[in-house]
Length: 306
Image (cartoon, rainbow, N blue to C red; front, top):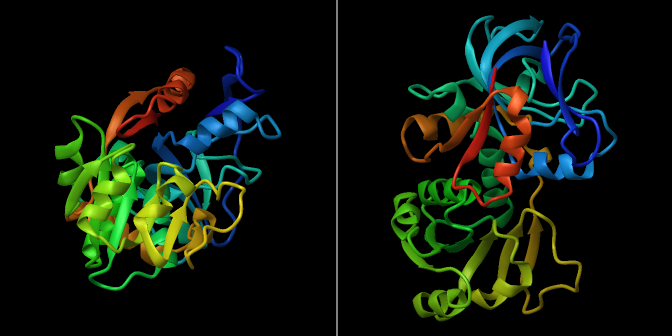
C-alpha cells in the first residue's frame, strides 16, 4: 500500500510516497482502506519539525472497513466509515491507503456526505466538543470564538449553538456572511476592534472565549471576571490571566476513542448543523502541495485522496 512518508524536515525531497506492508488488525482494531485523508495544521507542524522521521502524518480518514480484528458487531467489512487516527503510533497516520485504528475511533460515515467531506470532520469535531466540554458552559451562556472563518471555529460555532450557547464570532472583511452562516448570533470584526465589539454586545464580557486563532492573552479583555478561555495550541508561556479567568488547554487526544462523540458529529453533519469544507483534492504524490496550501489560512481543508 502507498503511504506518504516524511523523511526529514522541509526541502523538496522531504516527502516521498512509499509502498509498504501493514500488519493485520489485532482484537479491538480495524484496518481501513482510506479513500480520503484531510491535511491539518498539526500535519504541517510534524513535517516542518520532522519529529523522529520517517513517519506518516494524518489524523483524519474516511473510507471503508477493510478488515476487523474481532472488533465486535458494530462495524462490518466494506462499510463506509470515518475515523480519527493517531500519527504517533508505529503504524503511522491517515495519509496512507491502509491504516490501523482502534475500533472505538471509527464510526459510519455521515449520510449524504462524500469521503473527502467526511475526512474533514473527526479530529476538528472532537477538538470542538472537547473544548466545549472543558468550558462547561450552560444553556444561554455567551461564547466568543476567534478565527471564525476557520474550519475548527466553524465546528465550534455550530456545535455550541446546538447546545443553546450564544455565540459571538469574529470575521475578516468579506467573511461576515460565511461566519454568520455557521450559526453565529453576532459577527464582529477580527483584529483591533474585536474587544470593543464584544464588549459592546456584552458590557460585562463573555463567559468564555474559544481561541482557535491562538491570540491567547490578547483576547482576555473580552472575558468577564471568573470566565474561561479554551486554547488549542497551549497558553502563551506567561503567568495566569488574572481576574479569576481559567485557561483550558484542549487536547484532542483525550477524545480520540469517544465513539459517542464521533457518532454525534456524524449526526450533526448529516443534519447540516455543521458545514464540511474541502479546499482541494490531492493525490499522495502531491502531498507536499497540500501541506504548503495549509500554511496559507485556508477556509477548509486540503484532502489527500487514494
